[in-house]
Length: 143
Image 1 (cartoon, rainbow, N blue to C red):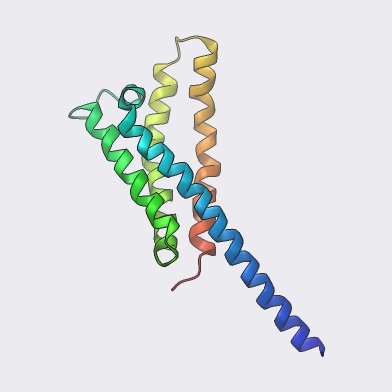
Image 2: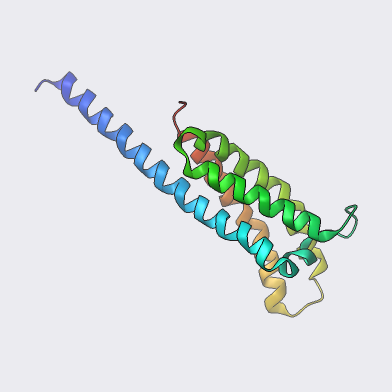
C-alpha cells in the first residue's frame, strides 16, 4: 500500500472509532438521564425541595417537568438519528437546572457539613456534564 491509501484507511478507522466512542458515551449519558428522569416520578419528594420557592406553582409540577425533559433527552440520545439534537437538548437541560443547584447550595447552607458538601459539589459537577453533552452533540455526525 502506498502512503495515501494508508492515510485514508487510518482516517476512516479513526472516524469509525470516534463514532463508536460517541455512541457509547451518549448511551451512558442516556442511562444516567433516564435513571434520573424515572427517579423524579418515583420519589418526587427528594426533588421538590430543590425547586426555588419563588417559582410560581407547585414544586411537584417542576419536578415532573424536569423528569419528562430528562426522559425525552435520554430517549433522543439512544436513537442515532436524534442523538445530535438530544446532545444539545442535554446542554440546555443542564443549564436550565443549574439555578436549582445554586438554590440548593444556598438553601442548605445551615445544614450538616455532609449535606452542605453534597449541595456545593453539585455546582462544579454541572460543568463536566455540560461539556460532555456538548462533545456528544459536536461529535455526532449530521444525518
